[in-house]
Amino acid sequence: MRLLNLLEGVEFNGALPPGDLQISGVAYDSRKIKEDNLFVAIKGEKTDGNRFVDQARARGASAVVS
Image (cartoon, rainbow, N blue to C red; front, side):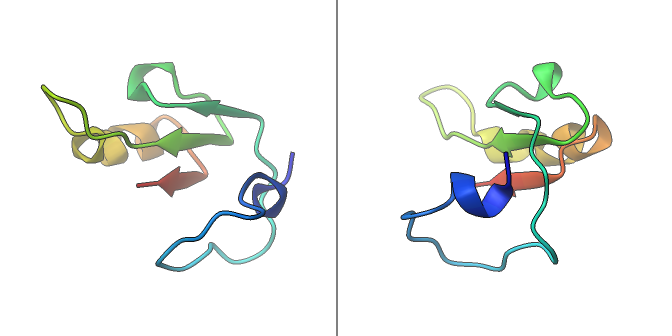
């Protein structure tokens, strides 16, 4: 699925990556990220997913929603 299709109707602040990226999956656990996945960084009671953005990118995340 294309990133722009996934984000259709979603209000956001920030910039979209250049081009319309192909997304092969979505995960909120950075340990489960695979190549071309979208990482969704969720702030929870015990931890903040934003702490794991670098790890998700290193594992192949092509985009991050934070």
